[in-house]
Length: 222
Image 1 (cartoon, rainbow, N blue to C red):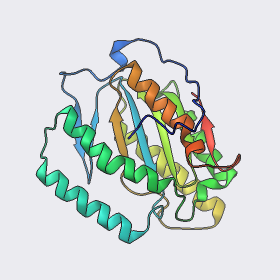
Image 2: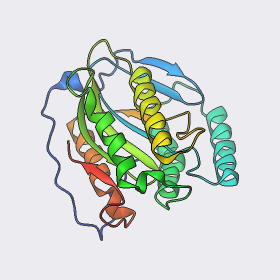
Image 3: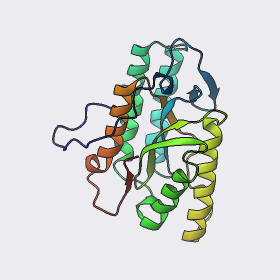
Image 4: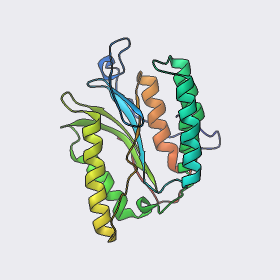
């Protein structure tokens, strides 16, 4: 999902999380997996990079084509997959999805500062209690978050809480009803401190990469 960045963009400074090896993906220790339409992996106390988007962020024909291509690829590359195969997946599918999201399709309700503040406040609310929050960015139609789950808390529960609360509050604020968020989300366990810095860099540079003006996004450096 994270490449080397656009060489025309200024590099954004990020603060290291420290070298606690227990905070990164521990291979070959077993990772817990749960699955809906996408597989999700987690290990207790490990940093994770998560992305989710608004339900209308992508045109339906484009999304159907992406899902068809992805389903064919998944059938041709059954789990378990090695690191090179995972890298191929993210090159073919994650990066393309990120580029589409940065085009700013859909209603882009998160471009409204009051709505992005609802999301930002929700992300910070249980910081230090359920998770340790790192950098995050609320883009016009999607959200990137880098955080570390604390022991006893599960990824799917935290995401459900964030998405459920913010959907209700934003819908109430905008006088609308219906689904705000796509049901699924994308997540990657962070392998080491270098990988963490790449994720943080990606988050901090995303508004620049999408050429967003001030006020059209909410960025927290952690």
